Length: 437
Ligand code: ATP
Ligand code: MG
Image (cartoon, protein in one colour):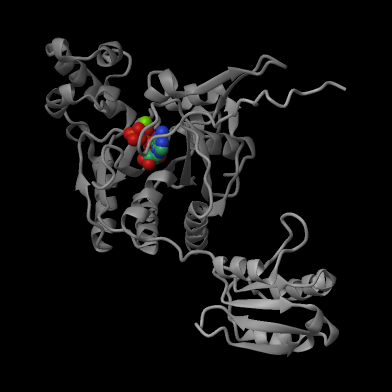
């Protein structure tokens, strides 16, 4: 046997930079959000979809566009050493959803309303609201072309903000029109930027002819004036695109949804057409976009499916939860209803059987357990019971065991009131507790 020298301290391993552990009690906030989303999605008849975290690299290059921030510099791409496949950790989920929809012919019987939750990966500089592993919740609707679905998705997001109790979120809208309209706008855009070539930063110079629309998505303040004065896509839209946009705004107006039209809103992926939108808050600093989306009527075909219209959005969970904290919202702290104090080892089997039936009845029960030699003194067990936040301690001692009883001691009434119950009657007592699991 190899002796491991005790003096050699093992170097600690830490998480990858920009990728966070989500610990309790913070994780309760995540569950709270996820529960609200699930319940809301059911009310809108959206069904859950779960796609792999790893996809072929080509999927993202083809769908997001080769000349985009994500594909150019943010993807975790690697070669599978076992078979040489080019793979990428998903930077977003729309492409994967569309791939799955096509692969399983999901539109065969008609349109689909879908939603997902999960981690995404982008190699960005970690900062507030920007991480390398972050989480999105997204909704995607495929197979429907009308603006009423764009509106439904916006109403769904708005309903979520209200369910969470959030306010001070504004909505920005734009229309990117159709490919032919974009082409005309593109020529005007290139002409505009050529006239001011000296103001263009390196990224913009590189994109001038490959993807000039992307220049509008710049975060460089030095280019703001140039971008603000650029020709606006909205002015190049034909009747049909304008009609789609005005059907959307008519529905939003009728529902009392406030929005502003931002002609410079283009979003970071190439797959969008017609409607694009973002929900933005001013209270999170530079990373104020909490949700973004739009229509992508050409993506299904681009990924090899029969042409089908589609529209969706994705929200950033970390940013939404930061806003939740900022506005003092979130779930009540998690506490058990009862804490089982076990003053006699011999009572363990009966105690555990009792707790099991309480939990079946919906009671939140935490059991004291040994952390060293034995279960510890009554005093230290009561300390733990108190710290757990439980309303009652259930005491399983030798005396109780002999009579098939348990002592119920109130921990929160200030007097420590206690009474004895026959184990057989405990479920009746438990009913009065009214826990919701
Ligand atoms: P940004 O402009 O802030 O980089 P984006 O346009 O790249 O955002 P999308 O790809 O539209 O973002 O993703 C939708 C949402 O996901 C964003 O609005 C944001 O809330 C969240 N998000 C995107 N990238 C990150 C990240 N690196 N860390 C945390 N959240 C993110
Ligand atoms: Mg980004």
